[in-house]
Image (cartoon, rainbow, N blue to C red; front, side, top):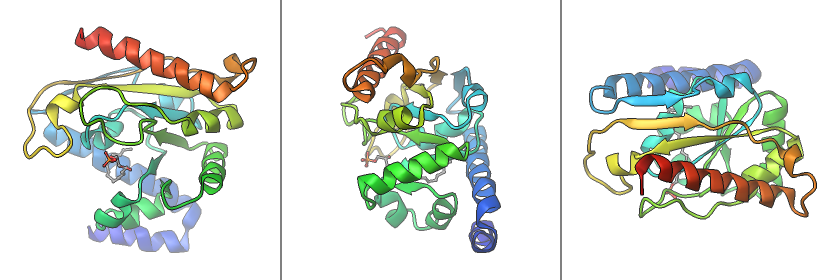
Length: 226
Ligand SMILES: CCCCCCCCCCCCCCCC(=O)OC[C@@H](O)COP(=O)(O)O
């Protein structure tokens, strides 16, 4: 906690460097939490390195549980910027200074144009964006409807989308649950999806979104066997 405030204070003095330091600090905090939870929550991840191989890309992720935020630290890229809702900035007041100095983007309070401009700026700086295209955690365990924003940004920036799949975090810790049910979490990065492949479409970002959502449907069912 004092360290958090210290980092936030340093941020006002060295904004550029401290952003990157902060993102790494948040990632390390996530990694250590996962390490301590390992007896109850072992995480198996495939292609953990992918976001490091493709810096400045758009990671999209399915969203079943608050645990997903911590699970993002199981992949190897530390320089990530989360696109968030407003409530974490209000309710997680102890994290808020760190989130602010890591320059996370509050997509609810800003206008669509501002969010787009900030996202493009981050990608240009080589930062990995993390977006949950469903917008909210699923309340039933089923994959929700996707929003197009993440794909719109990827098309505009000409950067790949890296689909990150989290299996069974819903079974472990569904939204609103009191306790959690220990189980192994499986995660995987699918191959990068490049916007150039959809250039011929009428609405490239929507075509890309449908393609990526279909990949989720296919891969999420193939592991759970539903
Ligand atoms: C990159 C590694 C990060 C791992 C460390 C975790 C550090 C915690 C910092 C707090 C960051 C909080 C970001 C919240 C993102 C967000 O916006 O969450 C809302 C979603 O749930 C959906 O909520 P809901 O609609 O209520 O299901």
